Amino acid sequence: MTKTGKLAVLGSINADHILNLAQFPRPGETVIGTQYQVAFGGKGANQAVAAGRSGADIAFIACVGEDDIGERVRKQLATDRIDITPVEAVAATATGVALIFVNGEGENSIAIHAGANAALTPERVTAHQQTIADASALLMQLESPLESVLAAARIARQHQTQVILNPAPATQLSDELLSLVDMITPNETEAEILTGIPVSTDDDAARAAAVLHNKGIGKVLITLGSRGVWLSDNGQGQRIEGFRVKAVDTIAAGDTFNGALLTALLEKQPMAEAVRFAHAAAAIAVTRHGAQPSVPWREEIDSFLQQQE
Image 1 (cartoon, rainbow, N blue to C red):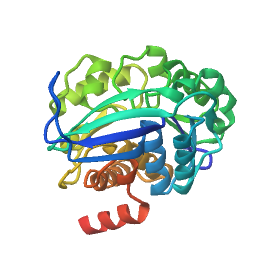
Image 2 (cartoon, rainbow, N blue to C red):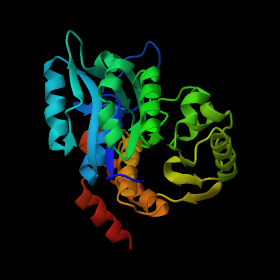
Image 3 (spheres, helix red, strand yellow):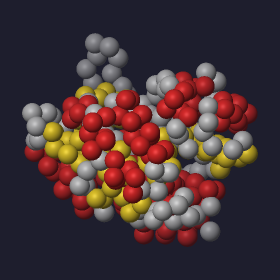
């Protein structure tokens, strides 16, 4: 990646309302929760925080509401070593909200209200095109309007900024958008929606990666949960194992992986080492509760990796 090694993240900001329960409620059923917390989340913000805490030089393009929680989120992001200049407060709008149930196995079920995230229009993206132009890499997800993700990808392509897409939440994407992506990081479900290939084995992952390569994407990383990641670099595929830890809560594990991965790549770490660094960050995150509260700092990731030697 040329230029200075700066990262731009474009994406969502949510206030997460998290309730821990023994099992998810069935329709019409009320269950009593054991623990409730409000934590800051949103895929964009989680990935920005993971990059900031793991040591990237990062600016974040996003929208919050003109409300108390929006102001608190911006202050928090600034303490996470993120340039929040492109985080706009939108008048007469609420900051995005996510309602999250976590069951006894640490699995989660999530519903989202976009709020101010819907105000991240192509016009707003264009207003921040200098941030994208100055970056070596642009990392995006799909909790922002799709036309804005496409607008940002076009700007990045014009300025030789690498485009990395974490295609979550899962949705079908146009060939035009996919052709502008340099690296894509779907999980098994997202890979199946994009390619039509169910991913349960390494062979499936290789086949799904081939479909994405054919759409013009050079690097495909399919995250496989506890089995690690299928990395396919221009058709050369291998599975890179993750680290075994006791998971209490998988919220933001994928986001932590993406943010840390970009940090390592912008530091010119070889791809396989960057994936290992990202695996370590995600492994630490799943041992803690909440989205951003679970994201580790650089010192923690380095020390975790030293213990694995």
